[in-house]
Amino acid sequence: MARKAIAKNIAYDEQRKTYYVTMDYGKDEKGKRLKKVETFKELKEAKQALKIFEGDKTKGVVVKPVKETVKDFCEYWLEFEKSGTRQTTKWGYVNILKNHVYVYFKNKELQKVSKQDIHRYMVWLTDKGLSSNTVCKHYTLLKDMFSSAERAGKIFVSPLKTIKPPKKEKPKTSIYTVEQVKVLLEKVKGDRIELPVRLAVSMGLRRGEICGLRFKNVNLKEKYIDIVESRVEIGDSIVEGGVKSDFSERQIEIPDSLIPVLERIKAEQKQNKKDFEDDYYKDDFVFCWADGRPYRPNFLSDLFSDFLKKHELPHIRFHDLRHTFGSIAVLNAPLREVSKAMGHSREDFTDKVYIKDLQKTKRVAVNAVDNILNV
Image (cartoon, rainbow, N blue to C red):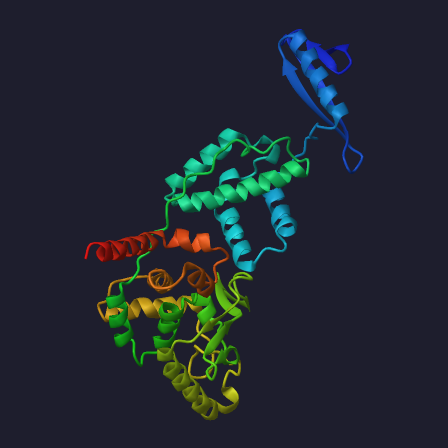
């Protein structure tokens, strides 16, 4: 038996004993009428649902039904909402979306994603072996994306509105002691990675800043370096450009021990330019091959790892040399100066990263006073 209309937008099916309510959302951008039918067992419930819908529609808080998938909106969000994002950050978004979000949600409609779906997605990531810090990145991306969908009127409310972010684990960093640094610097003398090692552990430079450093930004006479450029590896591509942030752009004094190394390299490059003539890569990079071509950042990390293994030194990442610099610096210099040298935007960030060493500093200060008072 066919449905029988019993009121405006309400029909009844006697065989199924079900009430059908037609929610009329009006027309879409192309002039097509948008409707959605919901079912109820009781007429009272059907009338109440229609009344609430009509009231919300009058207030302008009704979200029109669309067939847009999670992937559809993510692609829009990435192209337009994140158009001004740094390439490295955007590459991270693309990886998360392609390798995880699109795989998990497949053709799931944006409007049908629930709070439970998000919770299950987080569990799925954890079961795949992703760290809590990586899961946090997924949470942040999805929260931003669904909030954007909410603002655009694509969904009524973000499914992440009441979901708390996963707890982050404190990053584990390995650093060298002063004694270990001395051994490293002794062994690295004359090796092709001597300069990058010294720039990282003596001045706190990032790997990208080292690979992007040019001699035009090195003033050997006045003994300072302007950190204004960086070379970072994004997948199979190298991106050359400015440093990480405005705070990362800085001027650092060159320690006396590093001046002879830089002078030697500059002299070697001068000779290499003569030897290679027109085949020399004339882009002024400080850390480069004999023909002037710059090193890939990832290759520098590989060289450093191989060097440690060859000389039976404790394994740390190349980036940990920068942490080593910070850890030693906070014990011997004002926090403000350490923060500026490392290109941090806030002193409290430097404090947070090197908190353990700062606690040591406090103990040193207290013990020094105690020794004086108890002479």
